[in-house]
Picture 1 (cartoon, rainbow, N blue to C red):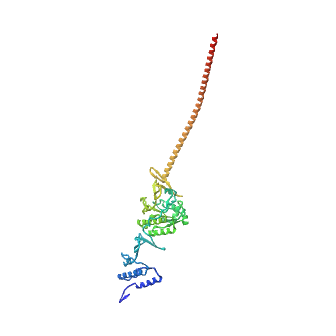
Picture 2 (picture 1 turned 45 degrees about the vertical axis):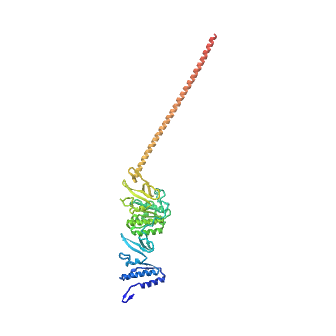
Picture 3 (picture 1 turned 90 degrees about the vertical axis):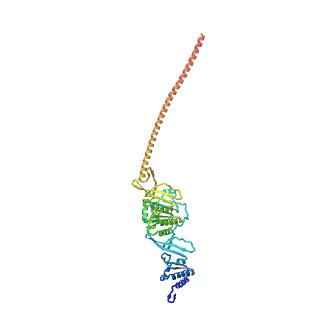
Length: 466
């Protein structure tokens, strides 16, 4: 508009064009991108502020929902410092670079008449649109299951009350490099697929082909499961994305593949993509998301050498329902593996240490030998067991020798008893014969005495007759 020789800037022409366009298509929404274009050549702040106010009020009068973009100013939300006051909702976007990784963030500064989050939320721009993820956990209202699923290792199932993990629980396997964390993960994924379920395996250290090849050495063929579309191995370096992109991709793959088990091997590599606080937040949101879906989660974590073994570098052990610890023990010039079951919530579980062996037919758990020098494994255990077998054999042979001696003595005793019995019977017969003879002789003497008596009596009778 011109007043005398001076030109006064206003948005009347814009209002006419917008009004015509809105009425023509009966628009309900209007987008102005960006508002700086309208006032780029003006230096009079008073006019800019007045026209901005007119624009916002005019859009409200038209009854349309308007989205207006603008650049942020120095130490203020907008360049002109007025938009946030006349707007009903203000959303601030920014982009930050930390450790050479860029992250877009979103924050709702105000939203009149509505409850809203006030935290910053990372967001991603992808082919399917914009993905916004909360930085806080979903909550602790997820359902729980009492169903038990096998670990794929029979002896480990026995340590877990004979039935395995709870479905929908979170499991942590920690240990030093080469302890066997990925081998247990492979057993679990194999058992999952054998049940007719699906397993999603996120690998941050090895390629899919490398994992398949390595697991064949312990008798597990994952390639068949991949071809059957029961197992999906997503292998990439942790530095390929930032943590938020990793989280979005994991959400997408879970929703697309619909697994019942998710394995992340290892979570310790995520330290390259963020600091400790960011990693804990990432894992907490991921675990809660998977628990809401009743998906069993298995995480492996590499413990650095020299650090306490009952502590993870990313500090998530308190979030886990079950925690397995693998460690190496060096003795007699060799290193052997041990497995500890540190905790398993909601079930009776073993507190015994097991020797952990990798064989051609898979993981084998064996009882350790407790000697005077402590726990013996590997060759030391084999030597001790051989010594115990030799000692047991010697004791058994000694017992058998004593039993043979006892049997011989018994036979000698029986022979002696038989001889004594024969001798007794013989002497018995002699004595009985002597007794019989003595009785006969006694009877004979009595008879003779009677006869003599009778004879004498007869003599007395004869003498009287004379």
